[in-house]
Length: 491
Picture 1: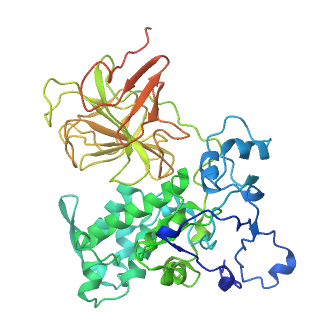
Picture 2: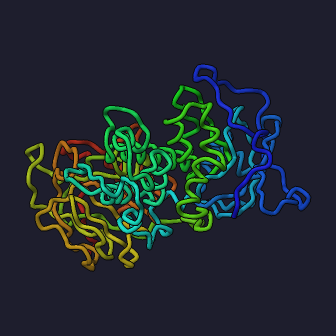
Picture 3: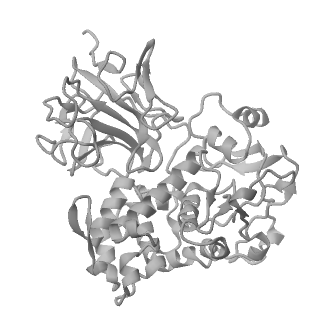
């Protein structure tokens, strides 16, 4: 598929100074329906136009995989009730909407939105099913650029460049194909064998002394990509700043993968240059040159009305644990707020060795067990990029379960600890992914453990778990208010 544009100049990228953001009376409208006459040049795909319309008018929208009513309401300045009223056929209880369904959305849009050009599908951002078969090491070493000869200190170990990329890809769940394409676009890391110091020090193009070197450059990029992707997914993200302090508002019809890439480049380029980077002859063209058209590998990551499978508590039965952290960052300090923390009760605070066991809350196979991480694959195909997986962190090296082990509900996985990152006390961190995509713990598909339903608080690490009339509140303490006793039902 060739993604060229006839009317690019008519659409443009529009931005405002930060202090000048306001709501206008006239706002952009939905894309018109194309006719055969509009597509006389079959190899050219024109961008949809956004004509002015009165606030509150119904605009057409084709549901994308992973869309929720809450997120659509936020993007279009509408409400869930208003969308439901305009679409009476919608089911009452839905988590994710059915891809391809045509909706009419009452839109109250801010003026001056960004380009409707799509750069990548969601499935090419997430380290999910489309990444299966892509070998990070093999692909990098096949290229003549300077990246293949680099190494860097990452996650407390000196690693070759391919392993640094793979570690970021696995831990943030970002497709390594995208990370390579970004490095190539910014510094020719895959094709230039004779770099200068700037290329090797700042290969992602983010010139900050605190982010010098491959690992820190990739950290910056991964955090920004995930904030963009999951912020758009949830509706929390409506706009962001360019490198010169201008406001960029993504097109409300845009997909999350493209918004993530837009947000990353907005942190690197001024508004005057961003239009070229985000257009069909910018980063997209570089990606195509490396890996072909990303939309040829597009797939839906989220089915309609996705629900979590039954999962128990991650403890040995008849033991008490403390609920120490409500919904917070799944990895690093970027969205989504997908993780919960649990600690063994103790009269002594801080990082102490614990004899308590973290247990499998469901059956499956262990696909990763290293560097304080254990990944449990619930669908049993031994690939954490597909289906449901559970991600455990701060798992002590002592007694930690081996990769490839088949487990059943209640089997011992290892001990909680402070290993693997910053921690103020012994605990473990638990998050979920589906097809490589992190899921918010308190979102439309809440984290449920033995019927304990997670809800987010007003800030990271706050929140509750509720089971019937019982409620426990997250706290970095050990009191009756945050304790859970895992009781098995009587036979």
